[in-house]
Image (cartoon, rainbow, N blue to C red; front, side, top):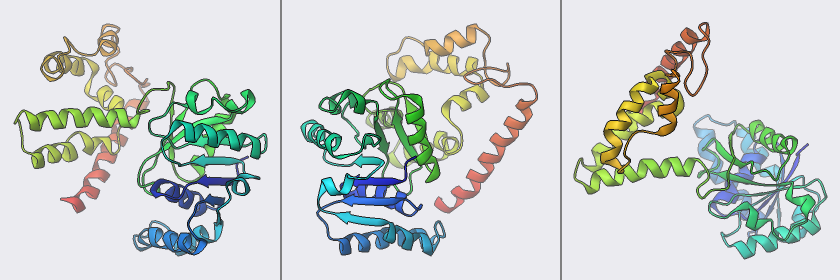
Length: 312
């Protein structure tokens, strides 16, 4: 069971990672060149707004300060830890050397994680033992760590399912939502989706189709209004995959030179898997579930509509 955690690096990401675990009761060792006084001051500064917004209780801020121990010696920081997360610069040689050292310093059961955004896991684990490679994972956080729920976790074939579940359960305990990424590709999952949206937004501006403020309004109060509560594949099922296929056939040849809509969607339509209206699309829906699922979808949009009034 993961109880003792080490965080390597106290930059923007490392500091936030340490705060998330510490304010949720975990024993955290933070390796950094900063002084303990500076770290405690930064924790108080970062988390005070969460207290003011009644997102956390004042006691959680104090818990975060009390649960973080600051180390300038990396070996001492990790010696008795169950889980070590590195947030050091994005340099392969530096990460390889760090994990090699950790492999010699940490207990056999310790799980190593990298909060990398660009480097492959296969490269980072080159200098560690074969046994340790089964206990290495990418855990990609989003900035700011204390507010963004998502954690992208690698499941590339090196780590057995029970160990993966142990890691995922820890993130569940601190209120994060983990997603499983099955292939070691640049950008993991969410960044690739985000880049797809950005690519089209930039293209619209470049082509003079709309002004920047209208593009952002279209994103915030159109697709992303639903995305706040409902995933794209759920939305496709609700709209009907036949409708989405036709839209793809009509639009994509102009947007990115694709000759037609997505082939996976076309296959599902050919199989009669049109979404909620046929009982199956990307997800399956029993007749009893359909009215319940529809009601929950509408409720989520209503809640999102209420919340969005603040940002107009």
